[in-house]
Image (cartoon, one colour):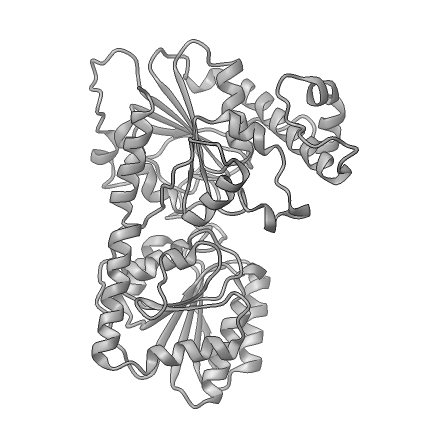
Length: 467
């Protein structure tokens, strides 16, 4: 096997899906070059009474790695609001800012929790959790001790986040009189926190609370004990919840059939520098993800080995992952199964580097063998570049991969041989058929995943909620 591991970019550890777009030093503000004009445009004007503000609650963005989808969305948000303040929920003091921000955006870290163990937090706050007005514990202990415990854990963590945010709030400058939108990127702790902040701390200005919803934060069937804690409380906390796919929306509609505040708003990616595809010899395959078990990169290794066994000339490049152990394990697996097929592991690349690589290389087919997804942004990026996609029907993937039109959709319970069959079906297309599939891939991006269109419509909806 001809394998290589390309040098990783000078960026923080991570993967393309959880990655960052460049490395920015620690600090509270930052303006990426070439972004300031779009970011600082304010629809209200300098003389408006009150400032339109947005408090964005993330997991990690713009620190460390993760939520790279926000790197495009933040531009549109900053163009619509006078100020954007970003606070990640899963990090505290000492995390490193790794993404540049537009000029009217700033970020801050929560103070460290005084009690690291949620059990101690729950014990300390037991009266508030069990008897308080928030009513986050929704499963009686006699019905299910396990689910009761999950509710208690969620309540303890949410109340801890509220206490830490309360300590941070005076430094954020959000005491103005204009409208404030609290936007949680995940339908979990951040959404609960937004509701508590509105009720308890931000009574002097009009406040709207909204949340996106993806997959893990709505799919109870895939959650431990088939249960996501404190769902009704979180639903009450928000004015609007925006699932990113019909797939995610279906869970919410089943859980809350009477709800009228659920609206699908999709993620998107920017246009690719190049979206015409050409097949070469060997047929160049590419995949892009970190290497967590659910991504099943090992299945791609096995499918490439199967294609080699069948005498098909292919090459494979995998983008993503900067964990040395995961990368070494996957490389060892590839060396074990693949003899002569060229294989490259690039490690982590920034979004910009991925786009440049797609523009410079005749990748003919994108692979995704994950067994769990929302709507994979990596597939959107491949379609923006005009690549036919072979993917499992995980989560909402089937909303953008249409079997036989812009690629091949295979069952989640797929074998390596079946993945190889799907790849061969793309390889064996006539030139005209392949060109048509490539055109359809790009057309799907333009219709469903164009970042400018999707984020503009999303932000227009946020502003409309102000009344």
